[in-house]
Amino acid sequence: MVIAKRLIVFLLLLLSLKAEDVGVENLSLDEAINIMKQSNLELKISKFNEQIKEYEAEATKGYKLGTADVIVEDAYSNDAGNVFGFKLKSREATFGDFGAKEFMDNMGMAQQGDMDAAGRMYSDPPHRLNHPSARNHFQTTFKYMVPLYTGGKLEQYQKITQALHKMSRLDTRKLLNEKIFQLKKTFYDISLVDEYIDKLSQIISNIDRLDEIVGSMKEEGYAKEIDQLEVQARRAEAQSMLSQATFNRKLAYQYLSFLLNQPVASIQPIYTTPTVPTIDRGEIEATNLDIQKAKLGLKITDMAIEVEKSNFLPEIGAMTEYGSSDNAPLNRFFDKDFYTIGVQAKWNLYDGKIKDNNLQKAKIENLKVKEQVNLAKEGIYLKVRKTLTEIRSKEADVESLEKQLEFATRVYETYEEQYKEGIKSISDVLIKQSKELEVILKLLTAKNDRNTKVFELESIISEGEEI
Image 1 (cartoon, helix red, strand yellow):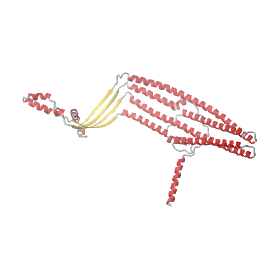
Image 2 (image 1 turned 120 degrees about the vertical axis):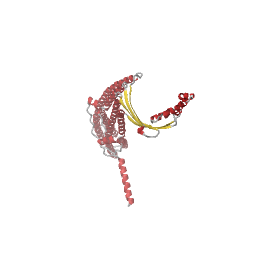
Image 3 (image 1 turned 90 degrees about the horizontal axis):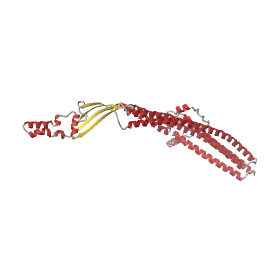
Image 4 (image 1 turned 180 degrees about the horizontal axis):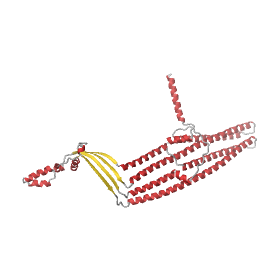
């Protein structure tokens, strides 16, 4: 009984794993777009870049608020300057540290008539000051520094980083547009391949029926062995084309699974023809992502000019400091505390015209980007018109090929009947069948090319969406 239960659990596990391997079935295009927005790896990376730019923008806000630090120092020295400084910091310096005792001893001896002592009062260096004992020094300091005025530099830096964050969002929207284009194209590719496979399967069925006809006619003496071999060779050729189409469909599903970052077993095929979107030049300039990015880049160069102008203005900052020092950590902190408050103003008056040249460079960069915006507008509109022309051309091809296919099918059927009557040879029939197959392939290729151009046009005029 226990073994049977374990076997059942094992089989259920295998079935669940197999179900997972199969992937999503009967997937619609709308469902695929939603899955891709959440799961596509490239979109995830782009969103991470967005977050990085967002934190960079937030970081620039902090520069206006200044910095507050706690500094803890520990030193041990017998350097005369350091030891005396340590004592001053700790408010423990005495006259004895200046050699007052040695001075007074020599003064007393001089008053008793010792002339050498009188000379030593002023010429001998005080031993205690110059050769002090080593001392510990612990200092804890709280320091706050804040910029009061930077000529607008910090404000412009903040605007620039915010604009760069917005640029990263536009990059994500552009990438999403590209992925939606690829997703739609893949869905329509799979649908057309399915249609092609159906057509090939019908043709193979026709070849099988023709093979039966040839076989019956051969038995009656109206067909030759070579006729049947020719039919069978054509069937092998068609079967090879069917295998290749099936392989292409498998590749398309693999690419679809890559876009969605999960396996896909089947989709809901799309047989409707995508409509051509309406075109308005003003709307294109407002929605096209490349133009939006170019305009945003122009704003960034405007801000860069203001940054260079700020270098001609003074910078003012304030500092406040509070702390305490002693030869032991935090010893009698408030008895030995100190504070410092200060303001600093800095104004560069001459730097070899570096600021002037940088300002002119920023202005020229701004003029260049203005022309790039105009170029983007004209280039995008040219691309739109070119794509529209290509769509119309492909639509004309599709219309022509549909008529050719109708004609080729009728000719093949006619030749098949005439073969039965002995009017046409089997080679004539198979040639017409090849022509039918050739037209089918051209028609489906033209449809695919037309759909691709429609999706390209949609991608160009779309402003994208946030994800």
